[in-house]
Every structure is written in structure tokens, then in C-alpha cells.
Length: 425
Image (cartoon, rainbow, N blue to C red; front, side):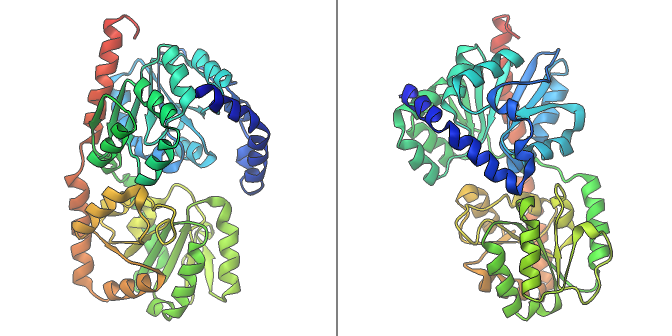
């Protein structure tokens, strides 16, 4: 089956270049470091390598506590972060600077993956969340690299997709040396697909600590936004959601004078959202202007990257995007960690457990559509006691679910210990 999977990849190769070219029209960074996507690298390490693969922004941000522990526990090793998207790579650069190596993970072609393994010779490979690549796992094992799947999550929708290639999926999962899932439900779905050596570690995203610099930036942003009127943040919005949000914002009477801050998930869409605002006659300014927001401004377009903690700290209430339309939602834990009350739409299958727990804890409120979203926001913004209670509940909710990093380190330690006993690391 892996032969036919690889054959299909080769047949799709022309479309890989076409897809890169199309994405580069909106985000030119997709054409940078092309050789890395096929296993050709200029950077190398003169130390033993611990490799983590974090696809994009969310997975990269989730590595913060783990990378800190790895660097403290294994100071003689070099941390290598691999990514798939330019935004993931940029996030890594922002978080770690020169403290780690970062490259693109090669596409799942055997020759490319084998070049990656020969070049970096990782002592350990850690795949984050739902990264099950059949040739990568097979060739990693063939190269003698212990392979772990950590912070693993698998929605029912994704599980159905992997089940369609059940033989391939079972083989790949069984070649992993260990899997540590976020929840019991994730673990059960993985085992149903054939996974072995599965434990439950919780969610690394709960172990995130709001950076002091971001909290200070949040205070500065709030002064720019103004301290008199309320500020409502729409964070990590996805394509199609801004139309719904802006129409509901106008229909609500522009939220009774509150300032709306919209931060799209993808930076290549900043200009698109600016056009939407202009066509609706909404008075707006961009975050990148970095100046005080005048009283007549109705919307701030958050056209900056890597400042989500600051946005959360600067606002009274937050809607987490990707949930009004069926994108599966985004991470709400960072907002709760700084005590920002959260509103969330109906589509949260990518973060089902965290969302359910946040709602049960009173840290978040679920709404069904954009109209209900703004009605609920108006109600909460008029109720200081309710907002204060949600802030407290959010921080308690995050604190109650921390500890995943230590469990991940125990799994990693068992692999490194096993390799040490064999004289490999």
C-alpha cells in the first residue's frame, strides 16, 4: 500500500509546484527555501539533534514549554524545528531566534525524507499533534530514529479520513515508538486505527505562560485603543467569517460604540479585509499604523503577526475565529490564560475537549451564529460582574489543566534512556 501511496505522490508532483506557485501569489514566502521541501539543506548541526515537527503557528506556539524543558534537560543537544508553512517558520523565529535550528520538513517523498535523515541524523523525532506521514515514519524508523507522536489529537472527522487508508495508517502508527494523546477520546480513536504504546498526556497548550513582554505590549495597545469604550476582539478569523462578522457588527448598531478589532488568521488576507471595511463605509485604521485610535474609528485591523497575547490582554472580550464556519476552531487557551472572556462558535471539532471544558468552567460561551455572537457580546459588555467572573474562571481553567509538559518529558526521557542503554545517544 505504501508503494501505491508513493506512486500517487509522484503523479501529483506537478500539482505540488502549481500549489506552491498559487500560494506564493498571496504569500511570496512560499517560494523561499524550496530545496528544503525536497530534502536539500544548507544548515547543519555539530551537536546531536532532537527534532520537533510543528506544522504551522498553533503547533509551533505549543512547543514553547517543551522546548524550554528540552534545552534545560539536554543542553548538549541541538533543537531542530521543522515546519510546513511560512507562518509557522516565522513564529519559530519570533519565539526562539537563533536558539534553535529551523527548516521546512521535506514533502513525503522517500528520497527527500531519506536526505533529511542523513543530513541531520536526529537522535529523536517528535511529531506534534496529527502529523502522520507514512514515508516519514517508515524511513525514520529505518534510519534508527525513535519516532514519537506527542500532544496527539485526532478528531472524529480526521479519524474517518485515516480509516479510508486503514492498512497504511495502522502500519505507520505501529511504527511509532510511543504516542501521547491529549485526551482519552483522542487515545481511543488512535488505538481504534491500530496505534500501540498510547498514553494520555493532556494538552501542551495549557502549559503556555503569557510572556511578560506581550502583557506589557497589551497594556500599551489598550492605551492606543482607548480606556473609555469597550474593545471586542475577533481573533484568528478565517475566510468567509469576516463577512458574517462585519454584517452583524453593522446590524448591531456597531456594538453600541465598542471598538471592534479584527485579526485575520492569515497575513496574506490583511488587504482583503481592509477592502471589506472600506466597502461597508466603516471607519478603520491598521494596527501597523501604531498610533492612538481616534474616537470616530469603529474597527482596528490587526495586520501584525505574533502579537495575539497582546491583543488578548488589550481587549474586554474575544471571539475565537475558525468556529463560525466549519474550520474546526482555533486555540482558546491563550485567551483564557490572560483572563480574557471568550466567545466561540458552533464548529470547534479541532479543539473539542478544550472548548467543552472551557464552557463548563464558565470561561467561554458558545454561540450559534454571528447575530447571536454580537447580542451575547453586548449583554456581557454591559455586565461587569459577569465579565469579571469569566476572567477569573478562565485563568483557573488553564491552571487546572497544566502538567502536559512533564508527562511529555517522561515519554521523551524513556526513549532517550533506551537509546542511551544501547549506546546510540
